Image 1: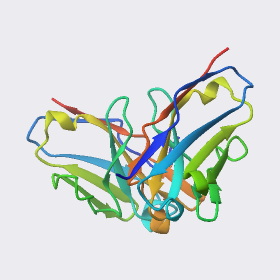
Image 2: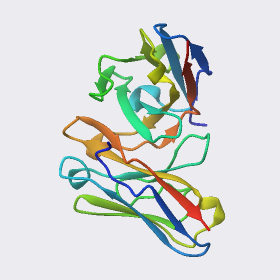
Image 3: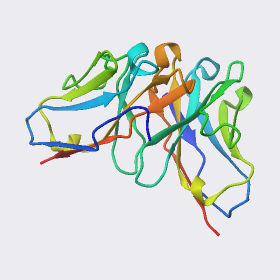
Length: 110
Length: 121
């Protein structure tokens, strides 16, 4: 059971906007930065968002992150079929004194 | 080019030992944290532990403390993950990942390609 809760799956049509939530608590999200990762089957994860809302230079601005209290959200606008992947949130947890990931969300682009 | 290159797939029997590696290229190896992340088949990511090669400061997740050992060799710019007695439940893909900082929790800006470990009698 992960300390960070994500919906198992989300879906949307090409061109639409989808949001993926990541819920935690005071020991993790509320007092630390959140990062987001994209993973295609049989490949390593890729960093999409760090420090809640910062984007590496190579990541399109269709991807954005936000945080409010003990929850974080990844938004993807102008969905493309190539965005179909698994998405994970991550942060630090003071209780376990280590990093934690959400359980992951499978995005289907209909 | 900055990259992490991991050792190849392994097939082992229960109770055998194993050490896999992650070699850093193209950046100042001693100045970045390197973590190990487990991903069991069809499952999510699990943070195992992290090491700062500059001084070998190491932190483990409580779920993995005592089960594995993380070490680093600055001279070869390589980080290792070691088991003394594998179990079938250790079957998974193992990724190493670089973190520029642990401040505020840190993040992983790039990842190794993964090492598949299969443990079967």
